[in-house]
Length: 189
Image (tube, rainbow, N blue to C red; front, side, top):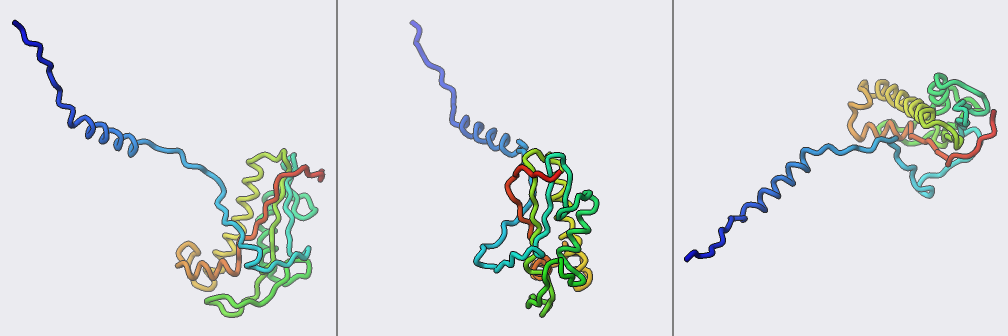
């Protein structure tokens, strides 16, 4: 007579092995990270007063042919950064550039700045993404260069080396103010 015996396999550690394999695959898997434009949303409209005079707005347009217009003049991407820097800073207090006013800025005291300036970026529905990103890069570079210049002038340090309090003071003088409208059909040719 033969006995019918069931051979048993110890499965107690199978859950541990499955858990370790799960952890291994989670850790070793690379995930694609989204790339995009880093933008800080503008403050609440009630928190900061605005002045909508025409002189306070620089209109930057990109049409469906990827042609760039600064104001109403056709321009080249290589001229955008310098035009934006002059607009943002208004170093000679020109009447056709943003109005300047004295404001109390932490670490600086009274500073003359352009608190109402806005760069309005508009593009056509047919604008190529590469042209749009190139314009965004030039506008951001204009702000970065102005912040770097002020940082070196007042603190004798590069902007990226500053502590948060000093960066905040510089950002108060040169706040990033880029307004982006939804793409439209731009009739400028």
